[in-house]
Amino acid sequence: MVDVCHYDVVQNDKYGRYLVSNKDLDGGEIIFTDTPYAVGPKPDTPPLCLGCYCPVENTLCSRCGWPMCSKECELNPLHVLECEVFVVAKARYQPLDDSTASSPQLDCITPLRVLLAKEKDPERWQKELEPMETHTEERQKRPTWDADQVNIVDYLIDHCKLGGRFTKELVQRVCGILEVNAVEIPSRGGFSIRAVYPRLAIAAHSCVPNIVHTILQNDYTVQVRAAVPIKSGDALHLCYTYALSPTLARREYLQESKFFNCECPRCVDPTELGTHLGTLKCSKCDNGVIISSSPLDNDAQWNCTDKNCGFKTSGVAMRKMLAVMQAELDQLDAIDPGPQAIEQREAFVNKYKSVFHPRHSYLLSVKYTLAQLYGRVEGYTLDDLPDLMLERKVEFCRLVLKTLEVITPGESRMRGMMFYELHAPLMYLARNEFSAGLIDKDKLKERLQEPIQCLADAARILMREDPNSPEGITGQVAYQSLEQLKASLEAL
Ligand SMILES: [Zn+2]
Ligand SMILES: [Zn+2]
Ligand SMILES: [Zn+2]
Ligand SMILES: [Zn+2]
Image 1 (tube, rainbow, N blue to C red):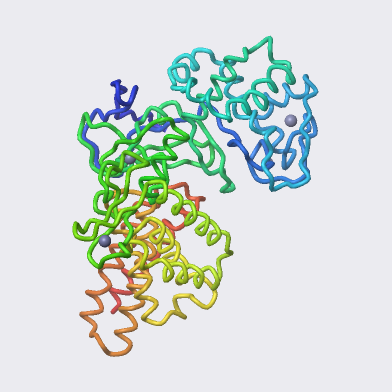
Image 2: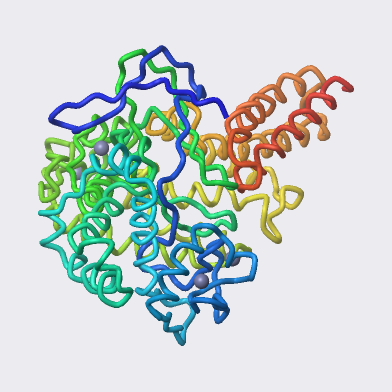
């Protein structure tokens, strides 16, 4: 692969080190690729194979006795190094009774891999990991510090007898580097693991990112692209949080896991740039909505926008309510895809439509999932859906796209997926109207232009993803559907 490098590293007080583009970039253009310094399990993970990261129950490495799915995975070069450490120290893995519970013993694996990589190539460590932020002072105040000290630092140095090779301070430092800089990535099998990318880690965060990243599954290389056109000299911003989360939740997550207070344009604006992802409807008046009086202060009061109404509520009450809502959403996510998954989500939307703005984060997340479920589950396939429900799918797709245009503009995966979802009901509705004699051939051709554009956008965005990932597969399907639709249009 050609080593593209369209960025410079610069520094200021606000971000520390960060990346700026060094040329004018088009949306979708590759800015750089990066290989992981280390890949491995994320903290609190259930038992997984240390070769391929698939979940395992009771299969273990024949040499060291740590979780492993097959002989083939035992030969994974990353595992061979740590295998040796465990064998020499006779450090055995204690299998859990419940293979879905998290296994704190696995917390030491990724730090150990970083340490072994450092030992092997000290120069690369010096250049790439040494300058990384660790936020040691803040981390020391947290309960995870003591847990890391026992499960990782003491375990590796005392139990695995690595005291002659590494110091305890260094191991804690590696824990900090991983906590602050590692990103969650999907494994080849689609399970969640983590990796630290030296160059990607330098990109600053914004809740309105202008770059996107794609993980390639064969070696976990990351490709970083411009999401939108970027001018030479502009800072490159990645989004470290879930894009559809409301400001309160995003800022709490960023403070908790990345140790900074986001003050990006979206966080500063009480309407989140007009998307209303955090906005509530007012129950005391007809015209007002409830927004934060000071979005950068998590404890600030929330007020009705109608001056005559005067309704207010505390930031604490708002955070409590969001936590309750999040728990309800988690329950919805636990339902297997099927008619129930649709019906319970529709019930959720109905229950909260008078409480939240129609594009509030929680309603929108549910609508995002509904947009994907309609047309896909038993009893709700595209052929089953009456026009009214096809229109509902269209409505949800458009609503989500309207928000995504603002918060993850350009070539983002989520937009690609929504364009793909939108094409189908538009196509079915047009065809149904044509079959019913409501529109003529010319009108049909005109109506099919939008689904064609949707498929073209979906294919362009999603075919950049790994061909074996769900998004990459959708990209290829979109491309084939596009060719078919174009052909059938010509034949009309
Ligand atoms: Zn495996
Ligand atoms: Zn082993
Ligand atoms: Zn922000
Ligand atoms: Zn009001």
